[in-house]
Length: 371
Image (cartoon, rainbow, N blue to C red):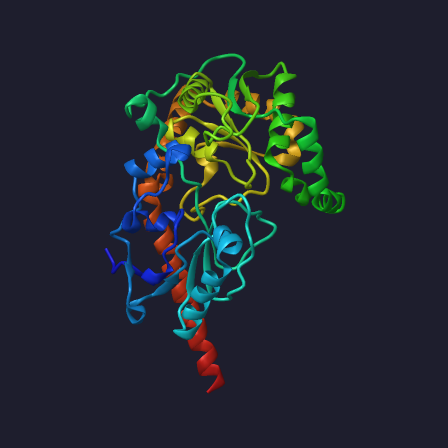
């Protein structure tokens, strides 16, 4: 194992509130009861400290790390963000930023490396490091880690989906008004249609699947976001158990984007060793140099939404019973090896090191050409 990546954090930068998860192994897990599942998840799985460390002497650092998520800094402490940028600039170091979240603000500092979970392929961002959203291992959490692949069923395939689908009329109209610029842009470039709020895509996908004789929809439609006690419509543990049952008792599990152009649901499906049906809204998939989602998923472009039932039925018919099982084993393996919290850091650090090396080589060539 190479020398750990050294991230400089000034102890004086510490504030009250949720620091970036990369600091949980060093500053502790600050999640509370309202984020019950996040607390349990980070208590059970931790980022691997063998690959990175925090230093207080900036002369020994590889990068400067802003200790709070970018959206929090922008909204609550822009002066701290400015100080992190200035410290990095003064010492000619790159800046490492946790930019994960449903809302992505652009980063002004040129030499910044940013963790992201959403975004769109047709809107690239320099030094973007695509990572999965933090997702618990539901097989370990809810089924004692015992994996039982599902046997392939003949006939009409079933598709499980337990998610927020219903959106009241007034909030929906307000959201559509906010989305008016991208909706208008979508009339001229259909890629921008992918930017529509996830609950609208979920409603469309459910309507298409429900009306088709080619598939059977195993649906648990919810009226609100279930990831926090503040918005969950009933007990969160009961909702999670309902989700797990729906996924395990279906041939496939549907995955549609959330507010970010990603979904925790995809990684929960993989953690249970089931085959996802991914509605691809121009999504960036994490660690794509190592993982091809098509090896264990059916990926359907959002522009083909009306053909979704046929695509699922044809895909199901094309798989032998052994291929169907193999994809489930692969889904579980990839989650544990790449996407679970304790497996992410080697891939993130490796990505950063490759980019830093490329940047150093570019600087060298620019220098030699100018001499």
